[in-house]
Length: 217
Image (cartoon, rainbow, N blue to C red):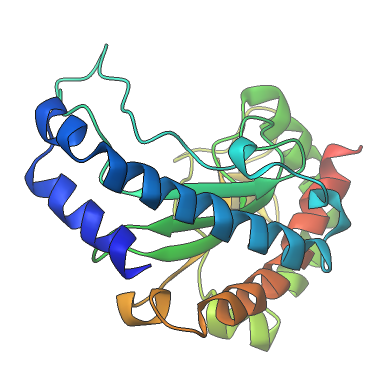
């Protein structure tokens, strides 16, 4: 992934259409590398989580082009590559497995990020009766070692329909259910990258399985 990281470093310094068009071949080679890596991970994760089997890498890798219509930041391109491997692809809003390639900001993650209100309501309703199971999964020592905390994205007050003195109110306040781990660039470019990623996703599988069950309610 060294060439991919090299492309992103230069893109960060030259975030304009002229430079991008002059280096489109470099971009296409980098995107092809992301698609290949995503395909490998789909096959590996599929041995752990059957829900992702048969996915197309193109349905998982995010576009590098930014939507600047309503943004003050008019830079046309993201300075990272990302891929979200989940049942139905990245647009499905299902729980899944994410990897992020960015100079100085690589990470692996899993769960469900900012689900729409009806999905979030369903998850909270399931947690209302199964919070202890979720906490048992996320406090398991091997899991806690890799993912000490859930992504901090919470309401300040109790969500509608739940009393503020609910035993698990702090858990019910969450708007996303995401765990992530930063990765060093040297790991991302090493031969051990796939093995390390699959190991992390294996840890994350019970969280996603819990969320699958919640959404099936």
